[in-house]
Image (cartoon, rainbow, N blue to C red; front, side, top):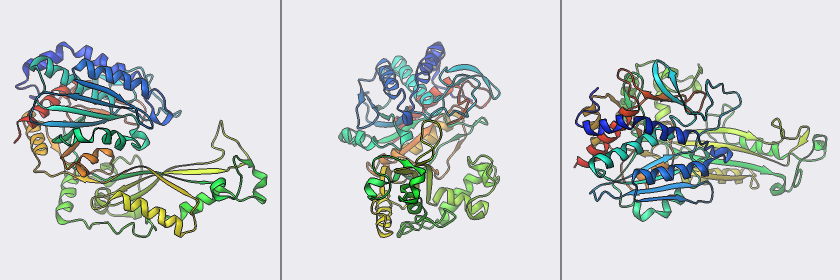
Length: 481
């Protein structure tokens, strides 16, 4: 795997500084940054901001938002091209039922999964580890080459796990400067143990929202706090109010959405899209749907569709998911035998290409009003349109060339079931955008024993190979016409 071909001086620098670079990643993993619990995010922002300065960014700033902080960084290479990088440094929480072999915030180096050395810890693979590895690569380029091949803007958030409620606020602060960028390129470690690297060519739109019912707004049921459960015989229940409002949104199976106009933006799958999806399926071994997608032990899909229909639905179908429902007694720290005065539900709604987020949000509000639930609030914390990348863009062409140079197989799924604020760079700025791509292996995202490979084996790259791949990518993009 000639990942270092042509970059011998840079590879030598990375190897000489490998242990220091590992320690840099460990310093970030050891600082919790759990946005859902407001735990350590500010402190983590301060650490990464200092790393931006250490690497050589000409501008490095902590951005104060209406919520958790974000980060701005800028390196002026005096180059013709500028990239803007999306990333997040918040992580999912460590849950009580998770069994870790090592403390999730110890950033332990150990062997795992056939690799001699991996770094274990929450955020090691998603997304802190790959982002800091990319910063290591920038440091090496500046130290050895004297500068970067492109100008770099980095705009990273600390509340992606909360649905990115303030990322647009961050974008608006720097909108004029971002508008001068040519592409959005977010580094990652998207390699499988067999050596294949994945580069996703599109993302669904994402709406992260909360629906809530309360006695105060309804002017019925408990007011200002819960009452004893025995009072249900004489008081209305805001929890039942929410349950019935929720049940009005879909058919009984929870799959068909009953909101007027929800499917008006749905675009039929084209022959080309079908072929792209089938080509991806073939590249993944043409296995059953539940072997292709991350569904755990699930055996039955939506409406018992065929494998082909399920794959098409994953890429091109909308979904309306309830993340969770909260109200009243939910265990320790909450009141049993109560009639709660409020209840809420969180949603993530995924919309495929052809959709816009705003009509969906507006349609849900109209639906609730039409059904008599004017008092039930619906608040979209984050709402982002879908995006699709053009294979002919200079960014995508350069990535294909970079991985061909490295002799690393590149798999290009036509889209993803996920989405988020990174699509703004395409939908609002018109620039090509590729998220989370690079050599390097890891796993366990959002679960126990999350890890990033430090010492690769065979076709699977480790930390140095990850860093070298980012150098190849930046140089290839700078040279692409």
